[in-house]
Length: 167
Image 1 (cartoon, rainbow, N blue to C red):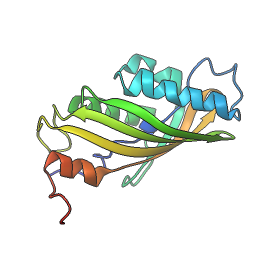
Image 2: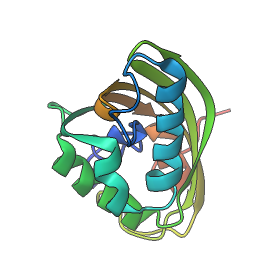
Image 3: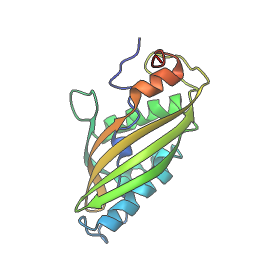
Image 4: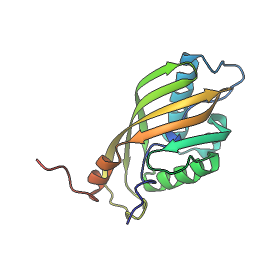
């Protein structure tokens, strides 16, 4: 069986911020929004972990729906590697972004193909489209904290793990 807490697609993932950090003020909403967009383009949509440290602060704390405790940067990396194994072709589209002070909210869509195991769910080969939302806090040009939610129920239905809604 799968662990619903770790099947969530968001995560520090929908996290944000990038380098060069010192040159940008943490309370510049436009700069923070640009950093988040780059994080999704350069890391999430490519799977390129070599860029992780340019975006996630060493003290990063990620709050994922269903998780009892926040995860740190290394926990995020382990989660992200599992996600990319399950969806190696995942691509993210930033649908909307709102920034205020040191926080940015993003509404996202993930498209990918389930080609690897996902928390006990064997690969199905099915294409999925999953919506999610992320709120990220930026300090010194890096993501220091994130809160993430996604449509895990819709994902499980698309994978055939759960039945579609009646009607």
